[in-house]
Length: 115
Length: 115
Image (cartoon, rainbow over all chains, first blue to last red; front, side, top):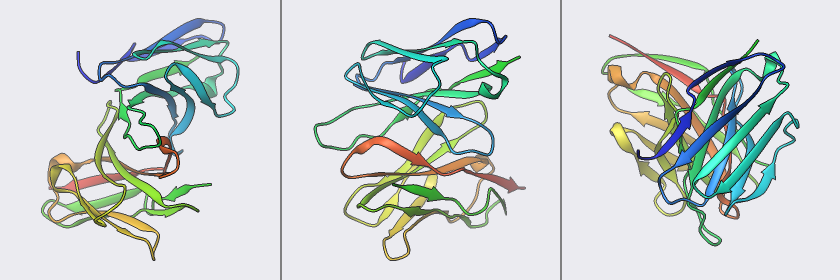
C-alpha cells in the first residue's frame, strides 16, 4: 500500500450505532488530519494531529471522537450521529517541518450515510 | 483569518479550449496557495502550489497558476482542455507562519469538458 488509505470506503449507519473510520498513511509523515466534505460547502477541517498530539479541534461535536495511536494511524470514532453528519470524510497527512511548510496528501475518503 | 473565493461553481469548456478557473484569497500574512483536483469517488490530489519565489507555478497535467499579490488572485489555467480534465477543482490558502498545517479551502469549481 502506498499513500494514504481509508477504510471503509462506504458506511451506512443508524443514529444509535457506533462505528469507526480508519486512516493509515505510508508516507512517513507526522501530521494527520480529518476533514468533512459536504455538498456546496468548503472542506471543513475537523481535527489536526501533530506528532500524535491533537493541536486543532474546530468546534467539532463530541459525537465525533478522534484517536491517533501513532503517527501512521488515525481513527474517527462515531456515535449517536445525526443525518446532517452524512458526508465524505477525508483523511490527510503531511510532513511537519520545524517552522516550515509541507503539503497535505489526501486519502480517497469514506462516504458516510446516517439514516 | 484567511479565506478563499472561487468564482463559478461550474465551468464548461470545449475540448481543446482554454481552461480558466478563478481563485481569490484573503490573507493578512503572506500566503501559501494551492490547487487540488478531485476526481469522482477519490480524494484530493495536489495540482500545484505557490510558496515563495517565482509567481508563475507549473503543475501536473499541463496546469499552471500565477500568484498576483496586487489582485489577491491565484487563477488556474491550462491552454488546451482534455476530456480527462473533467473533475472538481479546489483552491486553498494557508500561510507562511503556520505552514500547510491549516488549509482553508474554497467551495470548489466543477469543470465539464465538452467533446
